[in-house]
Each structure stands twice: as structure tokens, then as C-alpha cells.
Image (cartoon, rainbow, N blue to C red; front, side, top):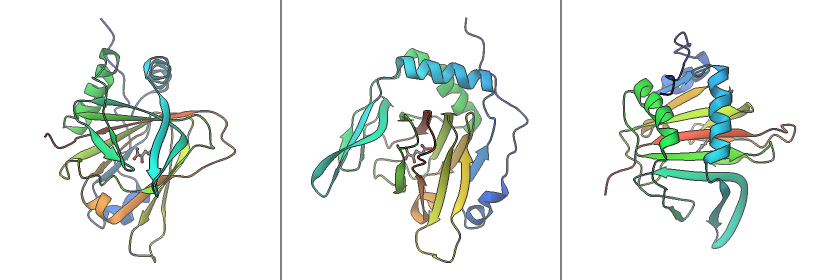
Length: 211
Ligand SMILES: O=C(O)CCC(=O)C(=O)O
């Protein structure tokens, strides 16, 4: 039997960088070192070996684009993003221990996983909110980072006087946010960073509305 996944029990639960968001009713939490380095390497390798990562495509002004970012979808519910419906593959057995660990930590269950692979710093993700109509607005979105550290920014949608909330997501960080207040009022992005030459994986566990 596989050994249980080790997580760091002494993680900081609150981060002052998130204060402007917490003060405005967002349910956001940054848990650095949620996963210990040895587990990070193990899962990074396992995902790169097993996940069917393909260049992400979408539609912009009627034209199909192919992004540098690669993606893969697992779960039991489909969802639409950037004008395209994504049909996930069934949960593979190899990801289930990690899914359970994230669910235990968040106190909820997830029916969808998006894996993003940024092969290097040329791949990023522009400002957007996770406000797709398929997403359960009362749910939590849990985002686990592996591999190369990357900047992660939040910008308020209407209050231009508010500074951009800046974080760096390191391997093993679990970032959680609500699918409601945070998505209604803030946009987030992973800026392109030309100097980064190694890859990053991000796993966002989500809860879609059941049809
Ligand atoms: O890669 C990340 O950390 C962010 C991913 C993201 O924003 C998304 O999948 O919507």
C-alpha cells in the first residue's frame, strides 16, 4: 500500500499580503509548504509522466488560438472556458490520493480538476476570474503549485486605487479561494516571466454544478 502523503502541519494559515482581500470578504488562504519537497518532486514527476497534457486552445474574437500553456482535465462534470466546452477524462487512480488529501485539507469534495502546465516562463495566464457559469458559486477552489515558482497577482475589478496583491507561488503551496466574492470582485493572473527556464504545474480542484 502506498504511504500516506506527508504535508507540513505547521503551515502559516494567514498571510498579510491577503489582508486587502480578506478585509473585503474574500475567503482566501495561502498555505506555503503545504506539501513537503519530497512529495512535490514525486507528484510533479507522476503528473508529467501520466497526465495527457495538451496545448490549451480557445476562441478569441471568433479565431481559435493555441496557447503555450498545456492543460488536462479530469472529473465528472464538464465546464466551458474561453468559449470552448471542456470534457474531462474520468479520474485516474494515480491522482486520487492527492485529491483526497486536498479535500481533507479543505473540508469539501471536488468534481473537477484542471491541470495547467507552464513549460517555462514564456507561458502565462492573463487576468481572468474563475466565474464560469458551470462553477458552483458556493464552493472553494483549491490550487496546488508544483515545480518552478511563479508570480501570482490579484487585481480588484473596479477599485483602481487598490494596489495589486502580489504573491509568489512556490512548489508545495496550496492556495484556496471562494468561487463567489473573490471571483466577482477580483481578477488573477500568472504573468509571463521570460527569465524562468523550468516548468511549473498548477492543479486547480473545483466544484461544478451537477446537471
Ligand atoms: O496557474 C495558476 O496558479 C493559476 C491558474 C488559474 O488561474 C486558472 O486555472 O484559472
